Figure 1 (spheres, rainbow, N blue to C red):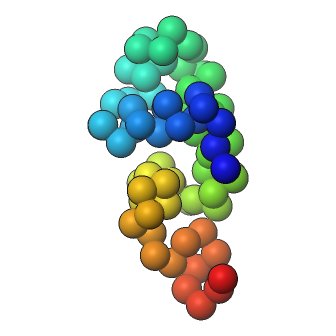
Figure 2 (cartoon, rainbow, N blue to C red):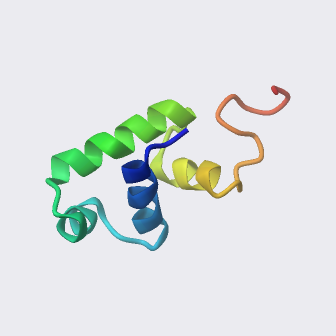
Length: 70
């Protein structure tokens, strides 16, 4: 579902890094990191970064479509 770069950014988010810190670590602009996060939220249906991480880690049992679907 996610690109290699998106998964890399997710890993950093999961370790508590901010978007600005991720940008510095990966030698990207802050805007680029925010765009990757926005794209991942759109792909997953997540309404927040927290939900994005929960979905990516398999912790969001309701999933992006809510309970009773799937």
